[in-house]
Image (cartoon, helix red, strand yellow):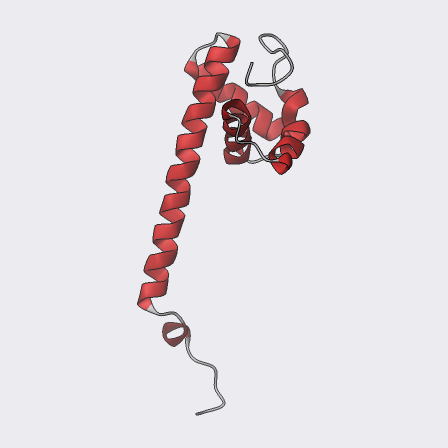
Length: 109
């Protein structure tokens, strides 16, 4: 064994890269699904178009410095009753950035 570290070509096995890419794609699909569901929830909750709901989601994300996928995931979890205590903590960080009309205490109303 030599004292030199392996080159970058030797340190990453081809299967590892493929597994990482597959995991990344699975996460992207989950995020897109949650975002779509959140847009629908916002549209129904506030009686607005899906375009307006999307812009609301983006604005809430930017104003609260919370990733869009996180805002979406938490809104969906709160709505469907699967939210964890940590999700409720995250909700409190961006809840004040949601529009006031159409809500009765939480975004699932």
